Length: 372
Image (cartoon, helix red, strand yellow):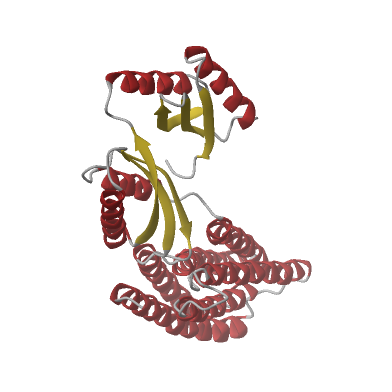
């Protein structure tokens, strides 16, 4: 484990421990007050705090398991365990919301008038302030250290502040008008919890399914590669996410066909090391050979690119290789996902290029728009 990874783990664990202690204390106070006041809303609020404490425990376990060494069954490591922990937390939040809603619906049918005291108002008010501060802190730490589990916990804590505020409003209405809306407030709280659970579930699920890599990161990586001496262009960047700050991938680079195998080897090794140090991403490199020796070839490359890019649905064309001796042209096109039939588009581009160069055999590879 690197020093950066170790530091990240410590900060996530520390944040989670703070969340556990805070939520257990709040849950204890709320449970006592809720039972004495006969308030289902406050009791459910306490249960929700306990679920938050459990979420923090799961976050700690997830971080520890995520940094297990790679093994034969998991050669890419265990980094995606953090996404799984985020999914588990979201499911806990969702389940707590459903359970709360069922309880509140029962209380709506058979209402009881709650009995609030000054202590009740003080504890709820303190809980609101505490949860707001805790939510902001935990979410900020989650964004800083790219932890979906912490972001989920922080977001949930912020919702808890709203929940506690709703409970406080309900208590005030009960005291002033002597009517019980406790169960209705609880039902509203439950719906918010269910909604939060669904929203929290989406991010880690998308990561597990293979969401598109962050465009700022991919653009920065390709810009860094293009800035290196003897590299003409960088294309087809593919990144596979194996947990926060754990990615491997591949990229194609254009180089002059006059470079020797030794020169290309040293060039790609240097680029690989630079990307690893700056972005924490391990890349393998593919090569496009570019003929830059003659004006005629350069003109052909320019014309072929213009033809290909003129088609609607072609986002980019690159890797144009022309063998004048064998009468052979090959290149790649990146196709928009909105195109209904990629093969039809490919055949249309081949036909158009063949009209310009009828004596050449044309081969086109279809590329997926993995990154911007």
